[in-house]
Image (cartoon, rainbow, N blue to C red; front, side, top):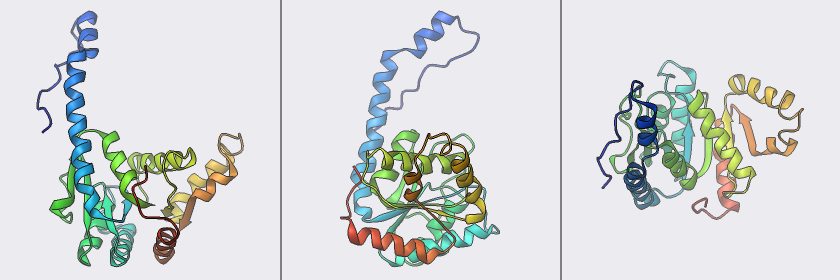
Length: 240
């Protein structure tokens, strides 16, 4: 089990030397390693039984009256009917929609929740067997990448963008086996892609071929067909 020992309180009024000692305490770093390791072990031991899966990302603020909410639920149902598990960040909004859609058709519904001071409780549509809680973002991100055969990215904020660009970076640098990345919502994502072409691409920070890693679409069947096509030509396995 993870060690419950908490790190020392750090106050701005403490002498600089004291704060430096706390910030660089090897004692606390050693205990923190056990907590990090426990999160990896829990994920590695239990997520393998999820089987072939698809990670669906999207904003937590998009509630039931948001048009993308219904799309995420419908897409998750379509994916689950094809035998894939659905993995989300476990929160509300579009994550909840995807978990709800998977569970509605009897599919496996996984939530990788993260401890945040402002985050709501895990949504109620996650299978208890596949409800995971993480303290560390980097451990959670490993689980998304390792066990998903595709990423589907609905509109969202910094967290959604982080997962999107993390996956694209790992695929481009060949640190993981390539998998399809779908961006659902042309009206939402087109501006970002246009900026990538007029700024980073223009200044040669990225390559024209990088855009081949992304499929921008509003067609949910195109997403499902693309996932099936990818899994039909590539062995289903962990990504690294």
